[in-house]
Amino acid sequence: MKRLAVFFAVLMIVVFAGAQVLAQDVVRMRFGHVAPPMHAQHKASEWFAQYVEKESGGRIKCSTHPQGQLGAHNQMLEQLQVGTLEVTSVAGSALTDFVPEIALISLPFMFNTTEEMFLLLDSPVGKKIEAAFGSRKLYCGGFTTHGFKAFLNRKSPVTKIEDMGQSKWRIIPNELFVDTYKAMGVSPVTLPWPEVFSALQRGVIDGIDLTPNETWGAKIYEVVKYMSLCKLGQNPQVYVASPVFLDKLPPDLKTIVIKGMKEAAKWHTAKVMEEDSTVVMPDLKAKGLQVNEVNAADLEKFRAAVKPVHDKWREKIGAQIYDESVAFLKKARQK
Image 1 (tube, rainbow, N blue to C red):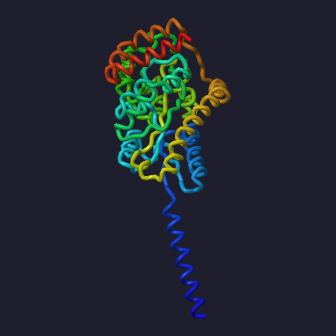
Image 2 (cartoon, helix red, strand yellow):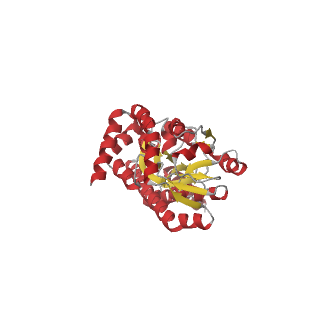
Image 3 (tube, one colour):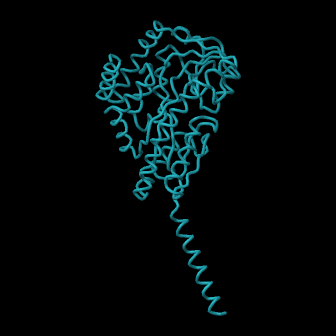
């Protein structure tokens, strides 16, 4: 009996030790972002978490953290740089202080279609933007978009550039967007995102620019009356990982995480496009939002107004990469 008891004791130690090794072998990672749970951005983070767990056979466990639970955009990017956060998806506008080259795809009236943006990102220009992340201690895992931003207003629609000065417009505290609105004749109000809904509700501001998907996801249609489609600019989102985290992974798991980001970005884009056409726009109109489209002649006036913004940011982004992009888009439009 004594020998049997010793045997079982040894067996339990071996089993317990093995369980500890297995537990240590599980890579735990977090995916943080600022979007609400119903938004495509959060759904894509959950898709990523399921993908890496499945592809790794359970060796990776990823938790998702929406609505800024892990901090604001810039805070999460700083966490990535030092390795205290593993992955985020972040607006291109929030990245300009970290990777100035990303401003290229957020410039006002840069693209005529969403397809143009992805063509540019798949070109050598896109590879240069991706490479720029590495020198800033960040890893670019993939690009997606929430679509074109539109003007939203609680008082009146925007049909021409002269309408812009009649309203108080909120923008994010970002140099590119301050420059853009000033060029359109506006003294913009900078407000953090959590304050926007109540500011519109109370009349502290009259207008904001958002994509239809963002308008729907944040229920902004409850506090504005008009949406003016104008192709103001894309709202690109970037999947970004911590190089510190990636470099600690075994090669097979690193490959899974990197591929997971690219696949999640594709899924994210498809989800936004699908929702916009089948759910978002019909629902926004059904809820009483009045939608108009700025005509081509007036769009040209907007483009002329923001040309000084392009000139300034050509130098900040890099004249060579800006000129390559303009030449690439011009050629693409001739096909």
